Every structure is written in C-alpha cells, then in structure tokens.
Image (cartoon, rainbow, N blue to C red; front, top):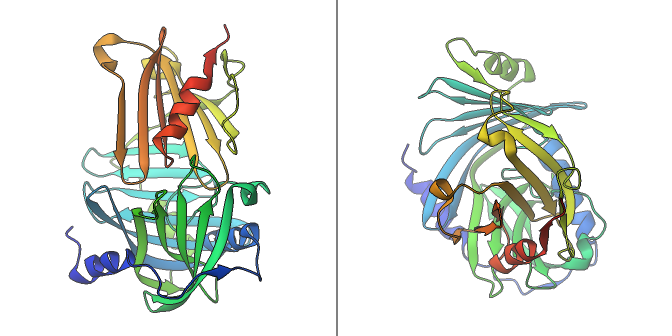
Length: 328
C-alpha cells in the first residue's frame, strides 16, 4: 500500500529539530523518563498508524494495543511491502504471512517495535546516556515533551523522543549518529487512545489459523558458556540478556539448529550475535552493511561464521567480534 501524502509529510517533518533550546532535565532522571515511556507503551490502550523512515526507505504499519490488568495484547499490520500481521498475547506471538499461507509461532515478551524503546530497566543506563529537554511540539494532534538522549561514548547512538504529555507514550522517535544526524525515525501519523477495540476481539482474530500452515521455530534457552563461547572482554555498557539455540520445525538435525543467538543490551540499544558453522558456499566474504540505524557485520572465526546485528555503530559490532572467542 502506498503511503498517503499526509503520512509522507509527517515523516519529512520529523527530521526537523525542535526550535526550543535545550536545558537539563531537572524533574526526571534518564531512568525515570525511560520507565514512564516504557510503562505507557505497555499499559495504555491505543490504536494508530506509524511511519518508519531510514536508509532511503519508508514503511508504515497499523498497531492496536490493549491491556487488561497483567494481560497485554497487540496486533501490528504492515501497510507496505508483503502482507504481514503479527499478534502478541503476553509472550505468545503469531505472525500471519497470507501470501505463503504460513503462521509463525514464537515466544517473545516484546515485538521490539515502535513505540517501545526500553530494552531493560538497568539502573546503569544513566552512565551511558544523558538527557536534555528540548521543549514541546505537537505530533499527530497531541502535545509532546521533546527529550534528547545523548550517549557518553561512541559505542551507541543517540535518540530524540517526543513523549505525549498526559500518557507518556512515545509518539515520535529519532535515532541520531554522533553528528546529530537522523539515521532513522518513526512517528505516529494518526493515534487514538482508549480506542474501541477489545482483547476478546483481537484474540478471535489471532485464533483464525484455518488454511494456514503452522511453523514453530524453536529457540531453546541456553548459555554461551554451555555452547563454548565467551567474550575476552566486555563491551562497555552492554550486558548479556539471553542466549538461544535456534532450530526450525523442531528438527535438531537442521542447519539452523546449530545457530546460536547471544543477545546483549545497554538498556536502549541491543546487539545480537548469531554464530553458526562456516559453510563457504553459503557465507561468502565478510561484509559490513548499514540500513538506517541497523548495522550488520559478518566475518569468519575459524570454523565458525559470525553475524552481528544491532542498532549501534559499526565499531560496536567490531568490538564484539574482536572479543568473541571459542573456549572448546
């Protein structure tokens, strides 16, 4: 589906910086701001359309989010590219791919999509990011506080967030390089709070799997140490979050079953290390790639092949690759 003129205009306007000069945030610490944004993205009910721009590409999606006490449910429908609808009920995720008539079933506590930003609630975030308030602006018809999160080193990107004043929901987000240039941005072009969509309605839609083939990529929880991997030295600020042995369709003999995913985060940015046996015909030459804020590094490590991916500078991925070592 093509983007509407209003949606494109919304994204283009998002690259402009607020006109109000920055001042230190006295009312809230970095962690308090981030926790408020995180709580709003999970505990508020809302429906909206958001547009993402980065790497010369535009995409849009429609999101429905509802909550009922400790229960959360959301639906995200892609409006550009191949049709795709993803449903999440707490940690249960189903992704419908209509063209191939496939449903992917996974377990994830978050889809990792806008408007969510916080990856963990580590108190150490304040050591690696400083916050400055840049005034207020209107986004999608809502008054928003503008907050800039500046990294204290070159291992992570900065962020500029527009936070709806009453609810704390992030309504626009920019990822910034070391020069303050916008690498990627996401913004609501239309948003409604407390919209009339119920959890029961979304559950019914999530359960309509007739005519689809169910695929269940299995991710067995493990540790890097148990699989014979370690970091010679840590990358400042990044803590290990989880580690999985990946397999597809439950087949332990598949090539994917030998792929290890080791996930790190500094609380905002995340890095995934994918480690698998090296196959010359499939892996080719080492590469460094960038698409918007997402950077990818691939390289051979002896008999193994590493793919490092994250919304971080390339030098951060290099630091991980240089620190990674085989122990057995």
